[in-house]
Image 1: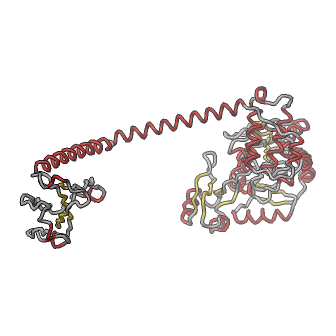
Image 2: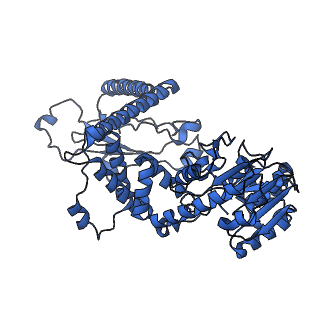
Image 3: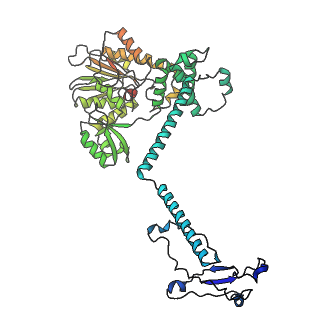
Length: 528
């Protein structure tokens, strides 16, 4: 420690300094210098050195012997403020530097006591502040809960304001001039979706939400144009769907038609059991689940690291790639062993092989298809699956009653050619290639095939006399109207399918109209 004692030269010297007996006040400045040697050596004493005016430090202006240097004790060795593990982030409070005045010892003592009292008071206050700043766990959780509840209240208020504004506002239906002006503009999908949702809301409460002077047909027509533009359909197809379904159901159907269907395989019980097949495929890295409670042979493929159509099990004929929907007509037909069965549109043989499987390779199945090139796949699948009771033929179904005049069948399956409007997810080209003219054309062909099939049915059969008619279309012209035509032309009746899912019926034949629930979305559709 170095002590430097200097006079206050800037202050003027008082005139009565010679006559006064009071000592002159001098300022003592203490400079503390710490070194490694002083910290290491506890017994070493502090050294006092003087500045440039060392010779005059001990002399006063009035040559008084009473002036003397105030003794200053050397400060204690510097210690750490905190010694525990919290010393890394706790910082001691900085103390103000103390200026020592060379006054009387009593004043110094009093000043020191006052400062100590102030320091003690400030330390106590800071300690109280620290105690108040410490938050208990219960308090923290309570605060977080209050904040969360406040956020939920704010969100609820905002949703309520949005709902009120949405249900009280009137949607402005674009006029022809506005549509013509925006004809060259590329409308973003989000904007189209917003228009569709708002029109559906208006139609749901048309009396309160419609614009004055606007009719319901105007809203429905504009809705069809927006849906056709958003999903890439021909406007006439969407208009046809809107004539069959409600606006909300039409949007739901179109949206579902854009979603892919899961891959499904059918176990060939002529060669394997479903449990053994599932274990074999799982060993090859295939993730699968049972198809549904209503099927004992179906497996749904979730994920596969190998091609499902090229595994040793597939090549050995242990299973067939077949959609869930195409299994349903065969289940409704329910052929029994030793029966005569006709499949009028058999290629490529998915339903035919399933019927042979249910008949346990007994009886006889005539697998007919007009196109010989498609029948090649039917014959190949029959050999691969081990089916032995199938006869493949290529006749025109409309002329078959003459060819089989003396040969009747116990059960007939007619999975008729159709427009494919129920399997758009498998063939998106139907969106722009199918027209209403195509629907009417196929409907006429279906009526001819259905009447011909009824003529080949053995109404005296003890076990059968049943026919199933199915399509992969949702159009009324290809389903209900065809069945009504057959009811008028032939003496037949409609019976229940025996299936505990979907909403379909069998006609001696089958009415294959497609409801909108998830399973029946593609019910009775030919998906190969």
